[in-house]
Amino acid sequence: MAHELDQLTKAERRLLRWLADEPQEDAIGSEISELSGEQIFAAEHLVLLGLVRVDYGWRSTLWYRITPRGRAVLVLIG
Image 1 (cartoon, rainbow, N blue to C red):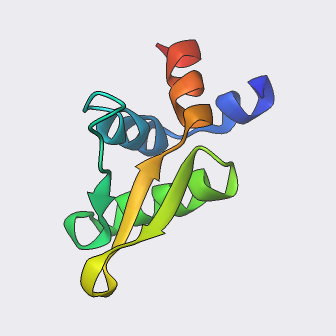
Image 2 (cartoon, rainbow, N blue to C red):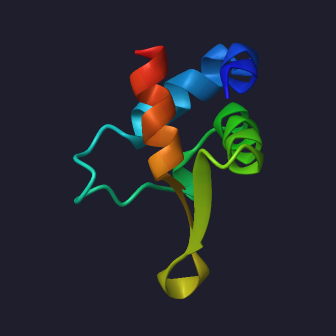
């Protein structure tokens, strides 16, 4: 996992922090329409790493949510 942490961009680190901003039990993530192109690009890479997941919501909305692994990475990177 250390190698993966070295490769996270600043945008990916910011997005992880943003997605984890709410307490874990209340966090609902961010709807894809709320994100910029740079954030979506970062989110897709984080999905490939297993740090973020995509959930399908009401009325065909897509949501990015931080995973438990993503929260563990945040602890490591501070």
